[in-house]
Length: 96
Image 1 (cartoon, one colour):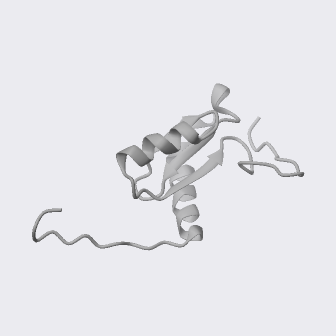
Image 2 (tube, helix red, strand yellow; image 1 turned 180 degrees about the vertical axis):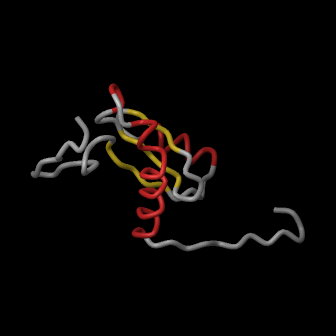
Image 3 (cartoon, one colour; image 1 turned 90 degrees about the vertical axis):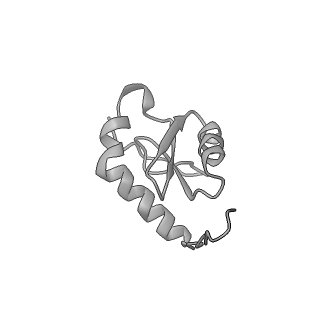
């Protein structure tokens, strides 16, 4: 870190990270990604910048975004579904 540069940490709750990422998704990302082959894939969104990456599991996307910014606040969701993962329940598709 350079002398004279002060870095301020911004602490967000899990709910704040989710809210910000969902705002990015609803305000533009959705129209870009909710189609064809992307349905069912995982999208990882940087809640600070709105940058996102898509892959099958979310692992590669997370690694890619963390490589760019190790302190990124990330949120993962399944494109076209109401949940990222199902545990004994069902995931409802929100897009045809």
